[in-house]
Image 1 (spheres, helix red, strand yellow):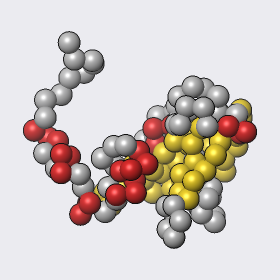
Image 2: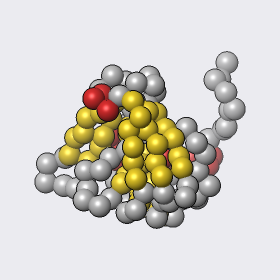
Image 3: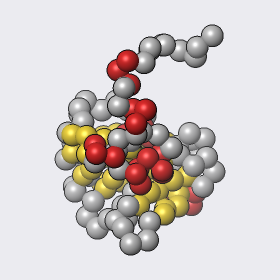
Image 4: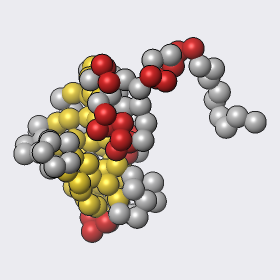
Amino acid sequence: MTKHVGSCLCSTVKFEIHGDFDSFYLCHCKHCQKDTGSAYASNLFSQSAKLTWLAGVDSVTSFTLPGTRHSKSFCKSCGSALPSTQLTNLLVVPAGCLDTEIATLPTAQIFTSSKAAWERAINDVPEVEGLPE
């Protein structure tokens, strides 16, 4: 059985996940753009993996956008995205909160019709391995 560990940016919240992920989606919908502040959300999904909070569970809070299934769990202290169990029988894990590497490649990019205009030309933007001087 696969084990992953993760945490928030301030390390208040720590968790582990036992089990495998069923899918890995890069979501470009407007809701995901708003709640990540970026071009898309990178979320892993599992119907069978088990989440165990190791520290800071009292610092985890959640928000569900009224009238939608869009929900997000995050650290009250630093705002980092965290695993969510808001949807019945579905664990949603933001890929960036994992401290262990994942071998899974994204299953698909979804809601691509909502891609940010500036992201459409991302391949033409220069790459810099660290902070630019």
